[in-house]
Length: 196
Image (cartoon, rainbow, N blue to C red; front, side):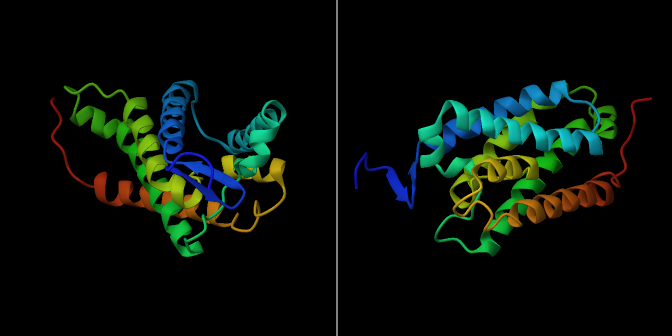
């Protein structure tokens, strides 16, 4: 095999152990900025996020065609050696961690209870994205957002881009629903003393 010892050939994709760290830092930093830039979530927002992901994948394909083709267009797939169940579990847990962190970091009840501790919500959210990427890149390429998976699959549209695509919709929706349920039923139910 060509390349350094830490490089592994996964079919048509060349994978290096150094890549997840860079990808995780990039996504974590991007989420840090985006949390500040976005307000409420709506159906229109979700449609626009899907269109943005499609456009973004198209731009990457246009500017880095050879790398794009070599790396399977960035389309999420369950990696060889993992079952679809493992991929689904990774997406559920990864999305749960991210969504739970968002709820916890932005919860008004928590801010009232912990007002002496300044909460800079994008920081824990960005770190959650970072850690989820470190854990799930080797398994699924880290979907945790159906729009991101959809954009890459639509633009690449060949090979295994659609084989496991359901995992990247079902997993994030289950993970987000579980995080919302846990937050509402368990965390928000805990009484707290206000400072007044």
